[in-house]
Length: 130
Image 1 (cartoon, one colour):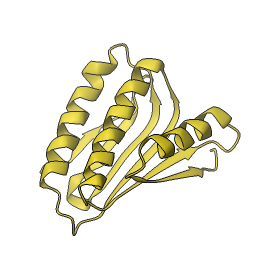
Image 2: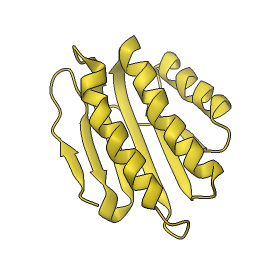
Image 3: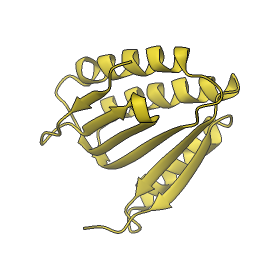
């Protein structure tokens, strides 16, 4: 499967889905004018990748978002739901939710994701702000 890279903009995160290395990253800010249009290809690519992922290949997903709006929230949950379903099916998936150590809302959102998507091994970790 071909890797997917989308450079960041002021409104959209950097997307580095390195399928060949089993390492996927979303980082930056997410408040696109049309969140569905931005996230639909990501969701489709992730879904295709997970369908062919072997249980012997662990996947790491890294979320390092400083800010996202409410329409992005729904679509991020959709991506995480795909990962959770794959983990429930026996695939080795580890997700990392990074947050500013002073941003309680982002930390709590990560903790909520841990509770909601119990099949997924999700680490909620503070990062050092630049």
